[in-house]
Image (cartoon, rainbow, N blue to C red):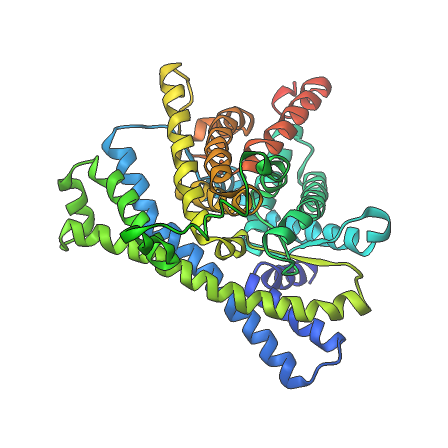
Length: 441
């Protein structure tokens, strides 16, 4: 019975759209809104978030083959920096015990919620609501605890759940102020894989330029270049040139094979247009979702959880500065390629290959942040540095995951290339000191 209850609870908590809808509906109910407003608010929030998730998924699905084609063409083999690589590797490693991930997720969520309820003492405000990312975190942390400490599954689940919940609670709260500045106090914070990355770059992004004079969204270009003053057009053109340039280095024959019957140049143009289209979908979805969350959470804050802030998918940041998001993606890619060159020159035993997710869903949001604080110059510097940190951090992380022999990869996004390798070093020290896990016997 208990396991069935956990399964039902997990099914609601891991469906981001339904969870957001329920929270919005309850918020309006607590605020004593009419039944019509409760229902319309719930549906608008759910549809808005689904548009955000759809846009994000389509970004990955459309551009992942581009990254794969470039890697295969140049014959580079190594570990993949991608969220899906981490999910696949840890799921395989957990094997028949993968079902325990649900317990970790539920325990983590209620640990997070308890810390928010005790916010008067803990100062915690953020409630982690990105269910798909939360599951990924839960399975990765469960595997790391089980691998390094080897304490059995019950204590591993408890430790992993509490540790993950602590991470969610404090990381989402840590970035509440910079996210509020980016979004003009839209009323949410971020729950994803680069929360510490947002905090880290918020500390010095303002040093590299003038946000008002060098805003990527307000650049007024002369003559025919004025066409780039239109966001939808500029993103489509820039991404057509950028992605097309990368693909053409692999040879026109390879691009033609990817086009599946269409002329290769039409395929490249469509890629740029699709990128812009998905950004428009994200923009509309964010407007719908944020408007309802902002209005409904007043009920939660007034009657149940004072100062609580919903923490949502990082894609919600992208529409607040779409030009900067695109620029951030491009220079995060350049920083990653530069770092790969260093790994090749130094004959590193570990080579990492970039996936689209860490390039765009880290580079884009950090680009938005950097632009808001320091303009387009800050975007270029910060996201190039981001690409380097994620690459070398992944090289650091892979030997510490217990998954190196699997040859799959690790997520590569900022938090999992900085904080979590550091936590693994601590776990490794504990294991070596007390003869646990791989040091047992």
